[in-house]
Image (cartoon, rainbow, N blue to C red; front, top):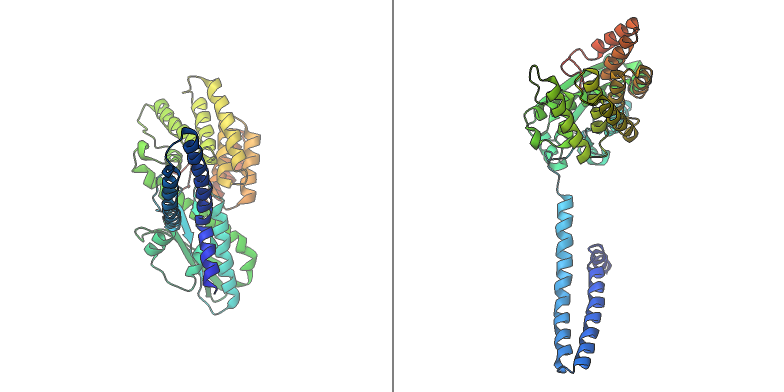
Length: 393
């Protein structure tokens, strides 16, 4: 008996009932119109009967089409998205960290770390991050990363483990390209066991920052190989961050123009993409400061508008805040730039790019000792270089 109510629920869910009701109403109006025309024009009596026959025959066809259309839409929505769809942000799935001990508290720590990393990465406008619900279905398994990528429709997969080592505990994390299964980045973090939970946030911030940097570099390297016409808005920003839009020796101004044009188009294409607006402000201010602007007033005004809008779109995103701070530093707004840098570090103290911007700001105003301290911190945190504006460093 339960199957019958379920069947009617399915009919309603697929909007078969709704389409059927609409058809019946429309058919009644058509029939009334046919009768009125028949009486007014004194047409043969069989006209309204013929119309009724066609309307009755059309009803099951409409019902079948409604059912089939909803099935097609449902299948399309349930299919995993391609990780390389043009115009889409790169997707990442963070698999549950593995507890390599019998200590149940470490199990809670591993799960909590996974959830917090997912949350931390979700703040980035560079990424499309799979939810906990999607990734925790893999808990306790050893899946093929390439299959995970296909099933979840992501380009990258992060995984890690928590392993006790005497009086210390080692946390490992690695970033993998889903399509090939190749490792992009890996890191180990050793912490005293008795201080583990005290430094949990520090470790999570460090891992999130490193993952974000690894992803940014991976996407930028992909963008390097693509022609500007084939780049999505996201890839345009990645490539512009590396300052690699058609640079030729002695043609700095035209190179900047090409980069600005590409980023401006990206901002127009994705108007809610904060990084595009903030980066455009940085590039325009760079153009003015380096003396290659043909209209300083117009460029500065455009930069100010994009900076204000970009910051409003993602006011709590450290990456975006750093872009805005760098843009302000270029035109001498050092006090405001410093405040933004400190805000970014308050949100994530393990984001190395901010220390470079902060060092520049301090140097601009003659606070050289503080600039040197910021650079020392930067070198400790990012010995292999930065993730964004200063990637060649």
